[in-house]
Amino acid sequence: MGRLLFFVILGLVVYFAFRAWRSGRRSLPGTAKPGPERSTAEPMVRCAHCGLNVPRSEALADADRWFCSDAHRRIVRDAS
Image (cartoon, rainbow, N blue to C red; front, top):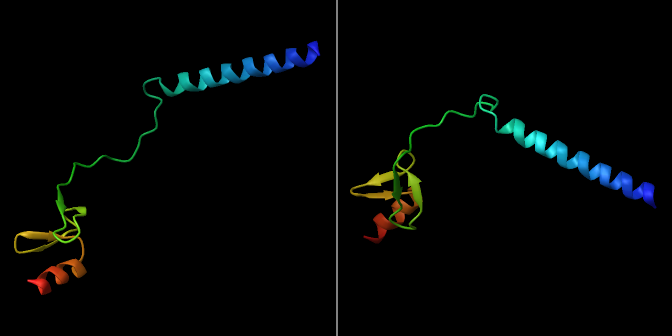
């Protein structure tokens, strides 16, 4: 019983030491892997039919309103 307890405690010590070593390596400056380039934030517009926010470059304009899809643009245009 004493041997089993010794190996369980030894395993826990090794596990926590390894986790501490790994978290310490990540926080060192200069060791972080470069991520994708961050782009500037793009303005969002709200669809006049469903209210979905979409990037302005992907939205469709009709007069002074914005739409998320051509189907929503047609629905609003036909209803007017």
